[in-house]
Image (cartoon, rainbow, N blue to C red):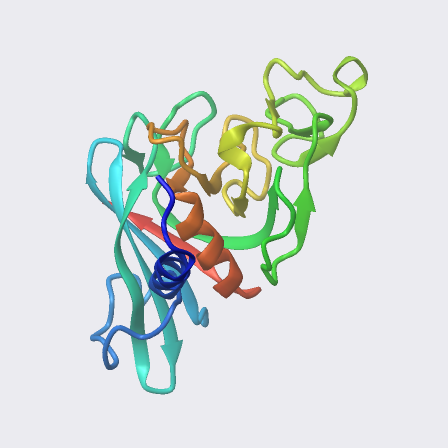
Length: 218
């Protein structure tokens, strides 16, 4: 059904306004992660609400203290819920505090300040524990990749329309898990990643600056 252009413009503005990150109130008391994030001033907080579901809150720290910019964002986590640490082959989201150093997606950069890679059919995230490429992005044709593509993930999928890389297992310890991202949801539990609605994700990505972290807990 067609709608008047003026109505469509107003509706679009309301949607955009709802995605702007701005303080919801004055400085909050110390949030749960306050003693675990070091000097970080931007924190994406993910707290389990049971099973593969969680809620996400977005916090900014200023001279006045921590301020909540957005709260209660519906979030999907691993099909096995959350776990104390990451393990290869276990679809649980690891608890802890992780850096958010870079981003990628099948779509162009939506405006994030993080280093961004637009991915295509030859972009992979190596999950091969026996390769020096383990837990890193690689670009190669499938038949020529110097790692097991069966143990890895091709990045050209709808869930990676936009994604931020979580700094899980940065030391690339074999068996310590790989390919943990904060990405677009398909409405289902993940394999250990954190996933939200794409419009929410894009607005958060536009806000993120180098030095931001994601803090995950039950």
